Image 1 (cartoon, rainbow, N blue to C red):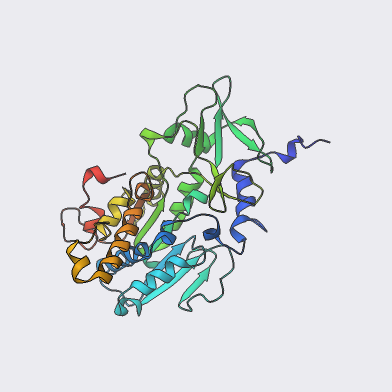
Image 2: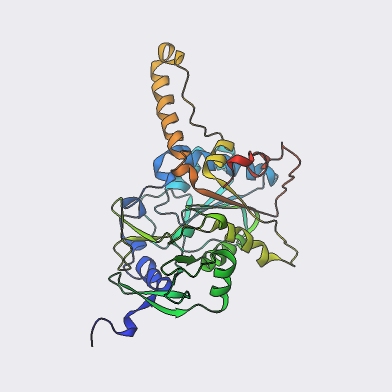
Amino acid sequence: MTDETTDQWRGWREAAETALYGPGGFYRRPEGPAGHFRTSVHASPLFAEAVSRLLCRVDQALGHPETLDFVDMAAGRGELATGVLAALPSDVAARTRAYAVEVAARPPGLDHRIEWLPEPPRGITGLLFANEWLDNVPLEVAEVDSAGVPRRVLVRRDGAERLGEPFSGADAAWLTRWWPLTAEEGLRAEIGLPRDEAWADAVTAVGRGLAVAVDYAHAADARPLFGTLTGFRAGRETEPVPDGSCDLTAHVALDACAAHAPRVYAGSARALPEGRVLTQRAALRALGIAGARPPLALATTQPAAYVRALASAGEAAELTAPGGLGDFGWLLQPVGIPNAPDTSDAPLGALLVDVPDHEEQ
């Protein structure tokens, strides 16, 4: 037998599931995601402050419930949940139940107010926030063969690939609807149906409130020709190899996710509006993160304050930068929450409605 035996070849979805989340998988490693890549959460505490403001807007829209939930999906080591609790006004923090959802074990020293769970609680009243979660939901990769047929890409543990069977059923339907490939050999796509389903399931956990997904994203009119599957290890991009040694990530078709969750609820008493996708730049600006430099006069009158304000402006600029973190997509899905699109002073209006069209994803 050689290492080319059929039973050692798997679709990327199965291979990535094992490599990321299986025993000894990448996301169970003790150093956590922050040991390998930097997200908006790690870039600046301003990000957690913005999320805390969003939670306060949700709280207002819900009429200040007795208990307000904050759920941090794919929580890493609880950095975002910790930052949000620290940034909340004391009266809101006193009513907030914080949950961190992660496959790894609870890290030592985490704030005792944060409950650590392997999956989100159900019946959430508040905000479910998924920062860079969907890009790590494993999916199948398609590649066009010499006859112009999209086929499943099979992969070995060492990263070697070959083409498998053509797609059929729901995967084929998703590919046709959301990422149609021409007959040009070598073109690739990532079939985002597992992300659509994972997002819809997360949304169903929200009883009343808002679900938000933040991720690398692309839209139907600008899908990458050769896909986006890649790896990250120790802060550097690397070849995607499903052996547990690196992160495996692919950008998210957030437009498909936005359309899928309302279909899950269609015909029920909890019918949902279609979610809205914004750039991170637009969302953070609506939440007060603009990146404007402080006035130079402050350097003369209050030099220490000027230095602090300048550092904060630099962090805000990184979070909102075109071509960088500012281009991330924010998918916002209200559930059973007032959302009056004609009322600019609605609690969520500034984020869900009053964002200029040119800032949208």
